[in-house]
Length: 210
Figure (cartoon, rainbow, N blue to C red):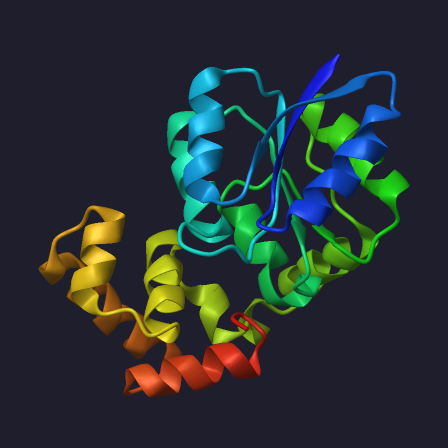
């Protein structure tokens, strides 16, 4: 039996997924969470074989949660189920440890297939994501600026783009203000931008925030 935890801030989405997964003889939903912080609580209980997680959640969102989960349980497969198109996040999150990336417009059967795949210790790569990965291999210089950021730089970038102050980011990520300021400087240099408003505009334009 594969034990699945569902992490999504919409109760109706969790209910729909839970009902569908309950129809599968080899799957059992053992936990639900509405944000990344609650997902970490589920992790502490230890009754999870695969975590199915949304990206866009209030507070402790999916990008932060993925990093925190992989730090605590590096072997746990985290399958991202997101409303954001693949080209916006998929390859970045796969580099950061996600076991797979599915768009919420996919068929329910594909979610089941993906859960079974990652539970066996393999990554689940959709044709759309495979094409993105192939494009990057063919033309490494064609990456979007945000894809050049490290894991921590990407987290800081998203938080700055959403209007968080350096002090708030430092508290939330358990870093010093000086360290966050250094990350901000690196982000600006790598993305060739000069202000936080530039970061926000970029993130909105590329569909990285809503």
